[in-house]
Image (cartoon, rainbow over all chains, first blue to last red; front, side, top):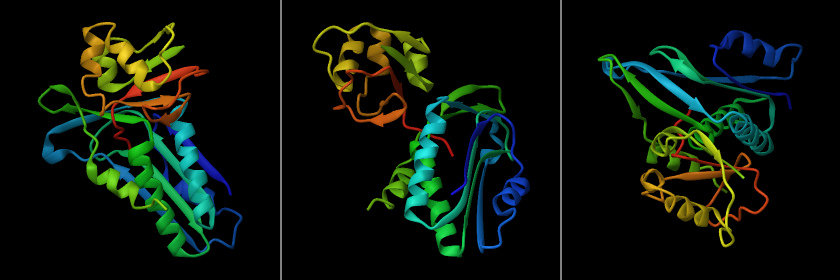
Length: 152
Length: 83
């Protein structure tokens, strides 16, 4: 199953990545796309700074992708995560899944995101409009519980 | 053995990474954390809540009981907030 995993500073092109998943194939019936964006937190936020662990980021997302492909009948998968400075409205992460039918594509995309939120080595720090910076965003219990619901 | 630090763990320790030579008796990640805390206030501060700081050995998440023999690189970091 073709899997594209990329960790990059640059924004991604959702349409181009989606097209590459289904190019040359007539057996894919469902493509699900999730794009994670930076919110402005009611106007407070100037930017998010995303720190990451090079090497482990690719390795961990690849592991999660391999598990997704083992659990669902996927025909393709894309996971792209940005690092560096991201402004409100800009992209942070893309997950694409392709399958013959929609249930596998929806569930695998949801699984990938729940695992990415809790296992992928990225850390967000806030840079605020008032010029202050430095607050590290804290991990949420709701994200841990979301990941746990996929345990078998 | 190389140690690498991320996010506020890195900030509290004041280093991105370092090479260490471990004495006998430091066999697990938990042992390593306790040994690091004894090296100075900055480590004490970084690991003040041992339950919060996570670890990875050679790019794989591990629990405190994990044995460190043979590890090339051990990373310490807060819970992740990607995605």
